Length: 175
Image 1 (cartoon, rainbow, N blue to C red):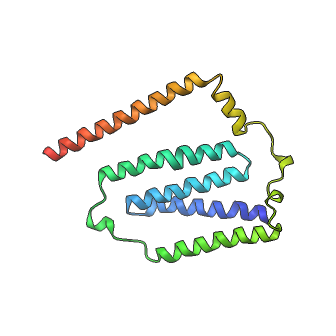
Image 2 (image 1 turned 120 degrees about the vertical axis):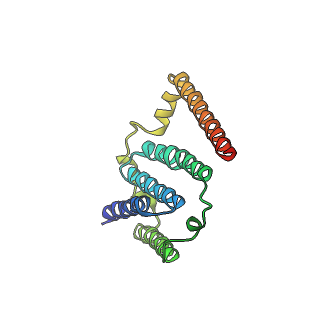
Image 3 (image 1 turned 30 degrees about the horizontal axis):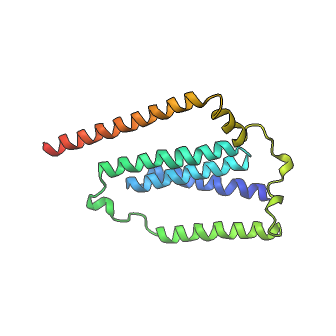
């Protein structure tokens, strides 16, 4: 029963986030729906004991990529009157209900296990293969040079994108 809940709740939130991405008219709502989708996917990765993939999902996609998406949305500008109004009726009720549901599930699982979280994630089932510690030690010892080269390339690409967007914004303001 617990396994079903640990799958069904993040999976339903994932589908809800995907529907928000597709059907919301405000770009900020689309971005927040994508954050919900990416976070739910990371939770599903955690239930599969793929902790490294879940951390990469949260740091890279839900963190860095979504920050870039929001910067692009801000550069485009959503200050049009029809985009600043709330379009989703019952949004506060939906958010409140989701929050109450999630808190009640955490409380239920806690009480079922006698507030012992080790019963949910037994240490004997977790393998050491592919853990963040092993991947980090390999990444920052034998693969440190390629890692730094990729970091420099990403910084240069981000700087170039900002410079191009700034020049485009200036040229469109002069027209």
